[in-house]
Length: 379
Image (cartoon, rainbow, N blue to C red; front, top):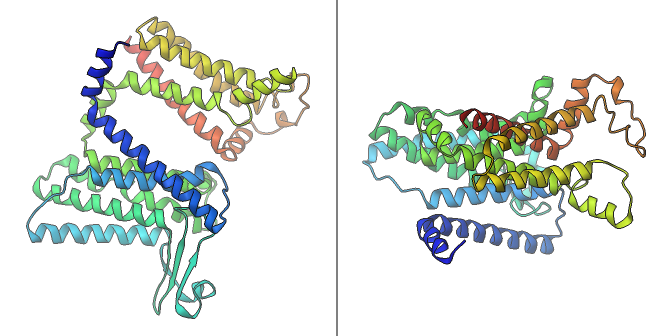
């Protein structure tokens, strides 16, 4: 790429580059703070994605509010919007379990002073502040408070917009379930005897709440109508498809146990106890090559067809590996596990719900498959 083209690209996307730089700086500061916090209080890292969830909430909150223009109205609309926002915030705090405890439940933590601090969790999850008053108890998790207050502030601004312009799209925005769902999903965790259909929500409640929170904040920031969403999705279909392909390729190439690193170990010791590192690495590279060829506008229609076939191989291969292939007993070094005697749907769902990495991979592969099918039909 020539220097003049880079300069033109930099001028065209200057604001986006500054935003990206600000986001990176904000995340870097949080990571540094988390490392220092962990060293001081001796916190342990349970899993990487759980460690990173607070950073997503905090970064989304700060960036969205920073780039959102304030709305100035008369005192009556502002009072009404403030009351709605306070109501939303109260709902979030109650559903998430932040407030509503019987004070006596927290006395072992708060003691006679009615206040306690737990610094044993990683930064963002901690320090947790416990309060037991005369009538109510509270458990304050930092990242959740920041997120709920930010979401309520965005609701406040959106209500002011509604009082100024009662468009159907904006009213639907205020009532969108994503606004409450970010707080409502974790509340399932305290319900006993839920149906099996809610198992996945219970097991991945924080992850699902994070996705819903980001979607709700984005929706409140852009305030798009359904027609606008469809138009923007159609207009940016190719970049979206490429992004999904890169994400799927990355998940395969950098799989913690079956990716490129494991394949390099096989090459080093001249062993091959599992075929998956070969398949994961080659398929990830194939996806990246396809994205590269598509970017220069070469063989796009055949690439879409090959991508559809590869994505179907991912999905069907995962299902077959945990059912009829019995975890790869066709490979000389793999012993039978008896999976072929288990109900296929039960076996697949059990493996997915017990492996968040696999679940994320399959969801992205389904999204990629849908995008590739649309691209193929339009080509």
